[in-house]
Image (tube, rainbow over all chains, first blue to last red; front, side):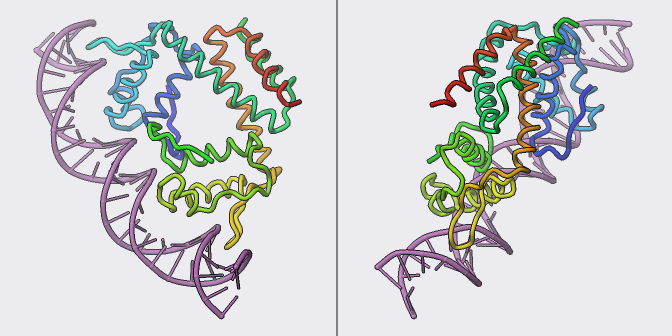
Length: 124
Length: 124
DNA sequence: CTAACTGTATTATAATAATTAATACAGTTA
DNA sequence: TAACTGTATTAATTATTATAATACAGTTAG
C-alpha cells in the first residue's frame, strides 16, 4: 500500500502520515474504506507496530481516519473542521509557492496550465 | 533578521535554513549581500554558534549562500543548477497542492485569482 | 603590528526525539 | 474458542539535535 523512503531524513511515522494523506486526498482510499491494521501494516513495512500506532493516532486526531476498537481503522468522511483548517493551510502554502515560482521566473500561464491539467482529470 | 518558533517541532537549523531561503527568495536579501556572521547570528537568536554553522553549511551546499574564510557569508547569485532543481521541486509541490485544493472543492478560479494577486505585485 | 573579527573544524557531552520491544486488556468475528 | 482488532503502558535502545569549549588560519581596521 505504501512505501517508505529510508533515505528520507524525516521520522517514519511522519512519512506514513504523509503517504496515507496522499492516498486519501487522491481518493485512492475512499471514505469508510478499511485500512490495514496496525500489526498488518507494521509487518508489511517491517517496522514496529508502535510506529504505525503513532501515525494512526495522529491521523485520527487530524480527522483523516477513524478507528473502531476491535474492528479496524477506516478512512474518515471529509469533516467540516478538517476542511476549514486545510483550506487556510493550503491557501498559505499556495501563496508561498506562487511567490517562489514568480521568483524563479516561471510564467503565470505555466502555473495556470498546471492547474488546468489537474482539474481536467476530475472528469475521468 | 529572523525569528525562531520554539513551538515548532522541527530542528532549529532547519528553521534557520527555511527562513533564510524565504528572505533570499523574496529578494529581501539580494545577491552578494552580507549575512550575519555565525557568531553574531548565534548571539541574536541566543543559540549555539554550531547550530548556525550547520545551517550555513547546508545553505552553501544548496547554493543559497557562499562563504569566504575570514570575510563572511554572502547571498549567492542565482545559479543555473539551483534554478533547475528548484524548478522541478516547485512543480511537484504545486501539483500536489492543486490536487489537495481540488479535493477540498476549491474552484479553479479561486486558485487563478490567487496567482493573479501574487503576480500583480511584481510591478510594485 | 595587533586586536578583533571572519569561516571552519573537531571532540565531547547533554538533551531530546524516535523507535523498538514486550506486554496487557477489552471487544469483535468467524 | 481462536484469531483477529484498537489501544495503552513501560522500559530500553538508538538516532538526532544542540550545546560547549576550543583551535586554526586568514582578514581588516586602527
